[in-house]
Image (cartoon, rainbow, N blue to C red):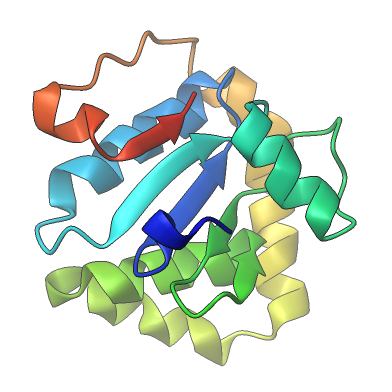
Amino acid sequence: MEEKFKYKNIVFFDGDCGFCNFWVQWILERDKKDKFLFSSLQSDFGQKFLSERGLETKQFNTLYLLKSDGKYLMKSQAVLEIANLLGGIYSFLKIGYLLPRSLSDKIYDMVSRNRKKISAQKCFLPDQHQRKKIIEI
């Protein structure tokens, strides 16, 4: 990844999904320690991330977290790590690590399959500070 993003955690999400955009906004509002940047999977930056790792480039039903150390997590592990990095009250979600990954990913996949039914498409309008954290939508 590019040098200027070296010390940030990058959340890759489905930019066409209202549910996903809601959660990006939710993270942005709680990222008090400025640990995250965001990019949609459909963007050039997102597509480069996927293709460099041999990941699916046409289906966008998986959330990825590229950690500042260069490792990436996906699905439930990405969600749990985002909560952990947010810290504070959200750290309690670390309890999710007690579940077998196969079970937590199964729950993640169920939500992912139904995400467009759960939330209608919403227009995400980041404020001036939040726009600085978005690499590409």
